[in-house]
Length: 141
Length: 129
Length: 229
Ligand SMILES: Nc1ncnc2c1ncn2[C@@H]1O[C@H](COP(=O)(O)OP(=O)(O)OP(=O)(O)O)[C@@H](O)[C@H]1O
Ligand SMILES: [Mg+2]
Image (cartoon, rainbow over all chains, first blue to last red; front, side, top):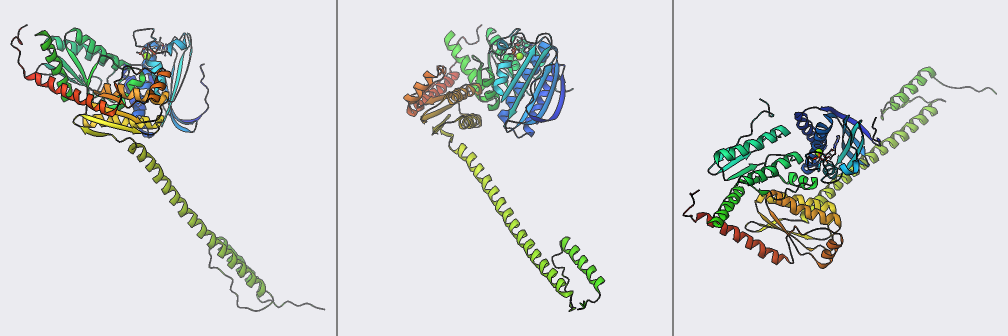
């Protein structure tokens, strides 16, 4: 349904489901390991781990869970770690609002989405009401 | 027992509670820890809390919010909280995320954290004397 | 007129030519026909040997050139590696952090700051703060001609991150030009402690040091009603 354009060649590294709070922790640890293997420095490792943690928690909180695809690919001449989060939750009504600092529909602080965007090199989001949300982030050295 | 069930220890030394967080916490664990610390403050009448996060490789918005919430709640209970030993990579990431944790006291290491708590207690003593 | 060919043993000699050519093709540079018979066919045999000589000479020459090229390439790669390493070293060297006084670090920044250099500098300073346990650091930008939004934001980020670690970071030596830029760009530095000169920053830092020593000393004063409710 939601398709984010794929302008890169990639190799699938792993596929996970986020269904519980534990999954948020284990999958973000897996992604840190992939970032380490890709030769990223400690700060970049921390950035991508934190960004995905935000996205996973959003899926868990607002969509009851979702799927995560981890790929490595070549984007704009960079060797990138690509993480795509797909859920079939309620979707986001106003993306501009959701992407702005401090906006939350719940009890959060509203820094998850805009913060995650600042932590990575590329951030794409698509959402459709009653269908779901897809977020793809990329990080390179 | 896996890391998810491991209880995070709360150690009392003199007037202070020391909480070394040594696992990558999930959300429930973070919330539980918060109430445990508050209960321990009430039970032991601790004057200060040192939360050691020097081995934490990541603090996201949830854990960040738990830590700053912790500080505000303890303050209401007349207790100071100091977050100790944050790693540089974690600090940079938190700032970029947008969580600057204003009003939360921090220290480079345990010794400095302890000094900070003593300093606070002393200034309070002077103020109230 | 009747032409006559004087050729001995033609079948065997053609077979030998085939064998020799096959050996050469397979890489045997020493194989030659080397016939010692003298007749009407021996000219062809000699010519083939000459061709083989030329060919093997050429091949040897080519192998030599290739080897030379390869060694030159690896030398160039080696040099490139050194250059990259030096660039990285330079990046670090150009922002040396030093402990100048008890509890005080200074990072004098000289030259133009780009986003990458500022980033490396920030990481170095924060790590040094953790390693030394110094609670005050001075980022002196007297030697920086201009800053752009990105660099100003990195500086701001450094100060905030230092605070999260439990340290104070002071920025000194903001030139009039940079002050103008910062205000024009609408960057809010009000949360940051800035000092006009490195000297002012040093004086402030030492006062801070002294103050915390004094407060520490207060710990030894006892208060008569300390244990009363
Ligand atoms: N996967 C999703 N499905 C549906 N709604 C979402 C999803 N992700 C985010 N949202 C909506 O976007 C808003 C902003 O998300 P964001 O992560 O920035 O903040 P938050 O989750 O409310 O707070 P924080 O992440 O700081 O704890 C959320 O409050 C929620 O309404
Ligand atoms: Mg969120």
